[in-house]
Amino acid sequence: MKKIGIMMLLCMLAIGVQAQEERCPLHYEGSFSMGASSKDLSFMGANIDLGYSPVNRLSIHALAHSDFFIPKLGATKDYNNAVNLGGGIGYQLLNNKNWRMGTLELRGTLTTSLGSSTYKNTSYGVGLYFYKHSNAQRFQPVIGIGFNARNFHGNVPNFYGPYVSLGIRF
Image (cartoon, rainbow, N blue to C red; front, side):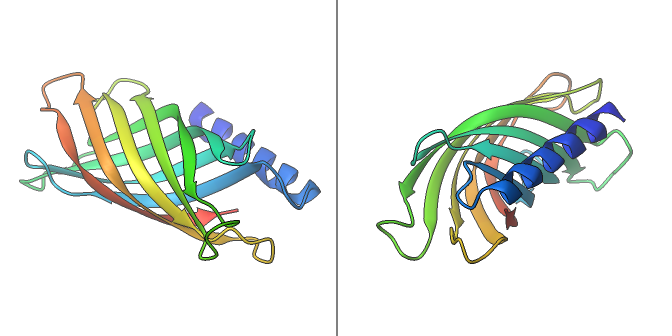
């Protein structure tokens, strides 16, 4: 219950600050991701990202994501999920000022799972994210592709594989 409360507080903070300024350095993203299968295990999940851009091209991210792991045999139980919290940094390779199509950002992330679970893990990720940055639109679609490495702290083999992420940024 505490996790849900913290995520709701972060969402309200991002929405409130966004409403006060037109060019706000805070942004919020909500997305769904899905990874390719590796070692008879694949994952899908929901992500919440609260970002802050202190300078034009650099961004700092606070992440929360809940992942559901699917074994090859298809045995799914309540303990096949993990909730991770962490952070990351991003750098805009192409931004809206010199590339009119939108922004292409390279991000690196590090998260670790909370609580006790069979799928307790530390996740390392790197990805390219594309979003249209426009003052005319309040919500922009976000598309991401990347590579994720998960070090499981238990009997589950480590996971290495690509992922795709689709979401909304505001």
